[in-house]
Image (cartoon, rainbow, N blue to C red; front, side, top):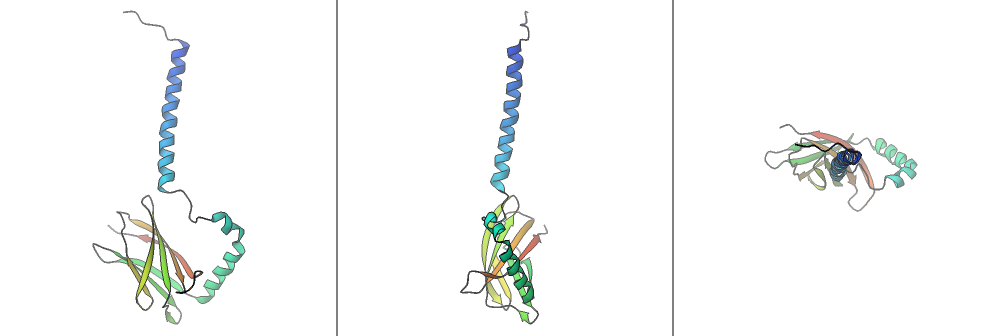
Length: 159
């Protein structure tokens, strides 16, 4: 049986095919990574960076209020996200509370919580099998759009 000698064109096509496969696999992984989490925490990060002094003033005003937030899951088969807002004087009531819940690798959702007891705001959640959630809590006056209180919490879900 006669074998053909290895020529330069054969080596070229072997190397080109190898790199084409590597580039295709890398492109697939990059597309999947960016598709599950684009890396943005806020949509207008450039504008927020330009207005950073206003952000610092807003944070200072929030610190002056002395409010704190607690967050956790309660319930069994259908868990409920419970957020408690407190001040030095007691529970903080009458606010519109929204939570941006980020489930790493599983997506994000915005929840509007209802006040079920003084200072306790709750909403049913779907965890999609996630064991960790990043919560961005935002409370506004019922007729306003500017947050009067914001907090970030990390929620660990026990299996």
